[in-house]
Length: 200
Image (cartoon, rainbow, N blue to C red):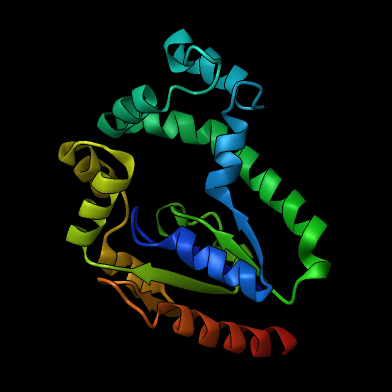
């Protein structure tokens, strides 16, 4: 069984994924794969530089994330061009990783920030789990964590699916509004449910 874990930026996806991993689920994070593909020796870098030019490469040879973020969030066509390069590579890496670890875990969790926006993962996912929190909390968390300006974070939020759109497709929801001391317990409860579902 495969659970698609998603949520807006700053919602708490990484924390939830870490909890599932500690409980024994096999976790594959598409953000980590994207970072690996765009590091200095990453497989995506030649295609990105060919498509966008040398400005897309930082001094160390990795993707210049700040420059690319500024470019694609203001230009939907450029964002689509970047996604056309990265998404097939990410998909192939996810499948490779899943094949390598599937027999060692009772179920898999794919962490996919843009699960709702893309739609391309729907046929691979058995359940969609949304980590949810109000947009103002996303905003404050991302500003504190990433040091981005409020306008930059708002642009990222505007490019993502709305909270309502994510909740509309969710099979399961983790409420991560405010400090939620019960969150780990809720994740453990979901884990037990997923174990039963995986056993059929």
